[in-house]
Amino acid sequence: MAFWRRIWQRDSEEVLASCTALDVGTEFAKALVFDIDGEGHGTVRGVGRKRQGLSHMQSGTVADIAAVVDNCAVALQEAEEMAGFRPRQVVIGIAGELVKGFTTTHSQERKRPDQPITEGELQKLIDNVQREALREAERAITWETGLPQVDVRLVHAAITGASIDGYALTNPVGFQGRHIKIGIFNAFAPLVHLGALQSVASQLDLELLEIVAEPYAVARVLGQDQVRQSGALFVDVGGGTTDVALVRQGGIEGTRMFALGGRAFTKSLADRLDLPFPRAESLKVDYARGLEMDQREAIAGIVGDDVRVWAAGVELVMEELSGGDLLPGRIYLCGGGSRLPEIKAALAAETFWKPMPFARPPEVIVMGPEIIDTVTDATDLLVDQQDVTPLGLAFQAIELQSTEDALDVALRRVLRAMKV
Ligand SMILES: Nc1ncnc2c1ncn2[C@@H]1O[C@H](COP(=O)(O)OP(=O)(O)OP(=O)(O)O)[C@@H](O)[C@H]1O
Ligand SMILES: [Mg+2]
Image 1 (cartoon, helix red, strand yellow):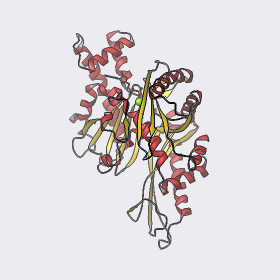
Image 2: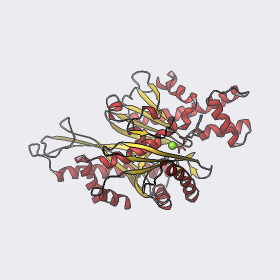
Image 3: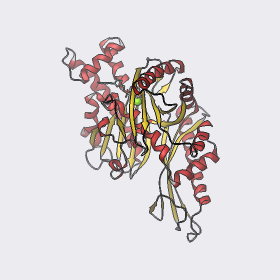
Image 4: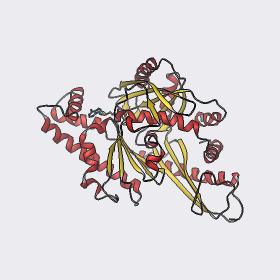
């Protein structure tokens, strides 16, 4: 697949100087144009946004390629004009219920612990992990779609950790020891979704540098120190989907998405107050801003009902992600849908966290661009939690470029050979 050919080429390519990040959201197509300095720090120079039509996306995935290309073109043009230049390359985010992100950890007992680990042995281990992960993703997606065979592709992969005899290592090659353990995060998606995004990029005349699972990008954007020690949960409430990512012990363990977001809240208001969708949308936004209005109580009731259903969805995926172990005491919240005050309140409520494996009441933090220091905004137009996902994508373009980790190099080599 073209994707892996690119990764392979990247080893010898010159460093990126500028790039575009494209977040093809259910509600908005968002574009960021940024440049990257010699130290690998990104600065946003232009931003653009275009609202998508109701039929253009289906809970996080492209439903109408031509319409989405048009919307993205508008957002892109705005961002490029503001920046005053046009990068050739783009990083696109992928989301939706059928994007499966999970970490597979594989332990193995070595027959000859006194022999140092070789490059070949490490690659064999990575290869085993990847094959097991692919089978697991195929099983999950086949089961959920109800189809006997779905073409599943690897979106991206990253090593989350390695150890020998409990001793954490950045590169196991050359070490002796008996128990070797390696964890790899993989995101898989049905070929149809990946293909749609590839078409969008090529019709926009951009070279697709990378497709990144959006919850992964969000969970990485805070920089390592903030999250590494104590771990965190990340919740991105968009228009059509809610994405949840779990970081524990330094690495991303898994991501889950479900098809419920801001649009569903607007739709309930439209149905129950008998309003056209755009009118219900502006009513919801005014309500969230705390503006004076006649129907405040009625709206609060409708939103309250929906947020309860939403919170039950979050509870379900967090339970599943926890795998029975303790969840971290911090929840970072982003996405436009999370501007409804009820969303934050729902996660902080005792009824929410009490039945779940939290050691203490989780601290719920709204993730504005001001707490992100991996990428700087020179436009001053990125103001709230709705802009976090595109910033995360921008940071992935940088992070993926700059990793020279020996383990990642070994991983890429295996992926090249596997041709997934
Ligand atoms: N001030 C606000 N108050 C309440 N809701 C808001 C506000 N601003 C935006 N929203 C909601 O946020 C949602 C869009 O958020 P966002 O841009 O993060 O979604 P998206 O990325 O396009 O969608 P997805 O991630 O699901 O594909 C819409 O449903 C919109 O109604
Ligand atoms: Mg989004």
